[in-house]
Image (cartoon, one colour):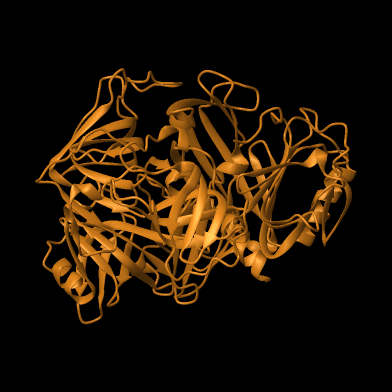
Length: 640
């Protein structure tokens, strides 16, 4: 695998996420593996294997994408089925674009799983998109423009990509809902309309370049082994049995327990003093060989969102005064029942009694550290206006909920605020030693138009980022770049931002999207073989969707001198989709053979998406993931 292909793996391995894994999803609410003759309990199966199920998502431009997952089934080669989701699970897939979530740990008898199915209910979906200076709720519809209810997708795996459970060994299954390939957004309508053609993929390896999140109540702590055990309970579930899991820690693991920070052995000792059942959330990495999980950071007790205190996460868009600031793109978790909703805009009040913590640091800061752009989690007492009813309530209903006339408020005067790593994106304007100047485009998922930098001295057109000793040699003027770090305290700029990680353009995955009208075409390619697909960019059936998105640069395929080539990476997942069914291939050659056979038989392709690294010099997208769609689509809408 070349370095460029590895750099694109983040987007493509996300695409690998859900086909095999869709079988074992346990999402934002709950789930786990029940017992049966083919899936015996641990006591009845000493030679069983362990299935770790993780959920993730390929990037899409949504502030929230919350739906109810009703069922996920696995089917063995002999036809025996296993339901892996014992309860309806509410999932916000948008929160998983930068991490994976451990959904369940199931004990299964050895054998192959060859296909599965997933049922998703959109009736109470909450899909939020950024529009102008605010976020609005969008309406999901099917390819015929009809409101979505329950949708079901069958997933078949080719013989080289079966999910195999092995005696006394752990297998990891990563699930990806793939928002980018599954949705097109029409922002010209009020409210915006999202056309959904669910595309789900899967991989038997953890998603590269993404942390894994493990949530659940504490079972025990072993300070000698530097580890602890939890009952897995993903997302905001208050109950449900998802299996037990061991979290390993190191001398550098950061802990925040009931608002108190510590590191390494001191943190684990503090965790050991907590009662069994204390809620924990860990972020870290999963070893691809041993499947041991090592935490880089751990939250516990009231430091977990909604545990004892209401919590609101989002980006600060303005400082209204010394004691108040406004958050947009806000997700709220309620202390009464861990239910979550999206009040969109929240005004937070802080005071001398507010504790300010920076993620990964043991230092205690003052409220001046909270500046415009910073991603925060604020803890306190939340008050929401009646129009912002919690999701799933009788008043939430379908379609666009009314925007509250007044924003929600959070009183954090006796609470705390955690500063979290923030992601900024924009074009490079200047590079000097230890400093980068950017034309700022977005902060996390919010457009710059949403932010009022008054009082900070920040200029988004010349945003100064300190980069320390990090190499900036791969950055060129005008190119698009991403930086992860923390905003400078309020009123202390310049510099405006302290970068801890700089992602150069070659590390940013590119996306190709093209559609061939409602009836499609049987001749989408000039040539096709095991080495790649060359798109015919002069095909008269091409609709309004024909782009390659690389960073903020959107290339019109029709303007290229020749059609782009979609070539396979060393590792990838390639799917053929039609309504209610998807067939996945880990071999590009097998995928191309089946695709050619279907085109030769007269089946029309209506749309295609691909994820990977685009080289403009060769006009080639080296793809870790390709999605080809048959059947009715709506190609008249661009992906936003």
